[in-house]
Length: 337
Image (cartoon, rainbow, N blue to C red; front, top):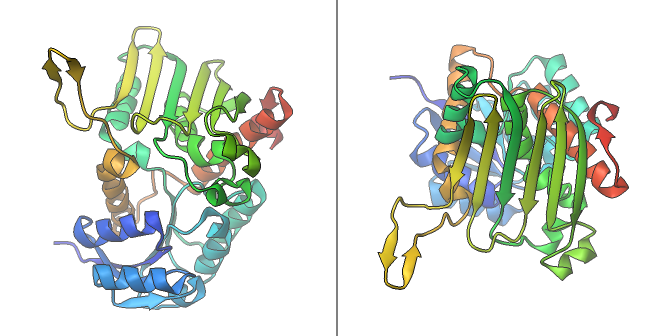
């Protein structure tokens, strides 16, 4: 039986609380000994709920805890840079949730700090650990559908976040917040993206206009290989959490994703119905756990992560370029950013 790794969790909001539950109930290689949040009530509540020994109220405190072998960053994206720079300077191996940060300048500073201090860093993109999406990647590598030529991704959320969250100064904007996962899968399946063109607007929730953001966006992409892609993201998937992908190849097509939470169809005289996936914790629960297990296994066995800091920067670069295209109404070359 492998020895458990002492880890600290930085960020005890919605996502951080979910991570705390996974780390204390399903991730067998982890010993969650500390949690930190700049809102003291969050850190205290999280530590009490999950039996975590230490509650800190700043990242400086938890990063200075010498009993920790690694830190997991689930804080607000705007705070990622400050947290990661501090953790790297103190020699802490780091797992950081997506998106890496809000700007490419900050992301490149983070990369420089990781390299300077020689610390381990793994970028969080849990969809690569989803069984369906991972199986599709294997099929592509095996040549089952021939050469991939077109990628389509779709992410539709069932709920509108708070207007405070939607402010691009906090979320980075809809593309950075929502499409970053689809961009990562597109790169994973098809290779690097060379140019993007985005259109979007406030089509479902008029109140979003006051934030300066959108609630629906469609991105068209061209890959360096010459292949094509499209991603649509929506805040108004009111019927359920709808995540799908499709890859068209020269010899076949892969369709990935589903809307049903349970594989049951109810067929009556009134029609055919089924349930829906409520939201991302239900849809990607197993993927989150697999991702954390992978992080700990990489640390224990000195392995290079599948998802590197370069992947974090590359995905962010595409998202930033796509956001610029949305605002400028023109095709944008990714390498210009």
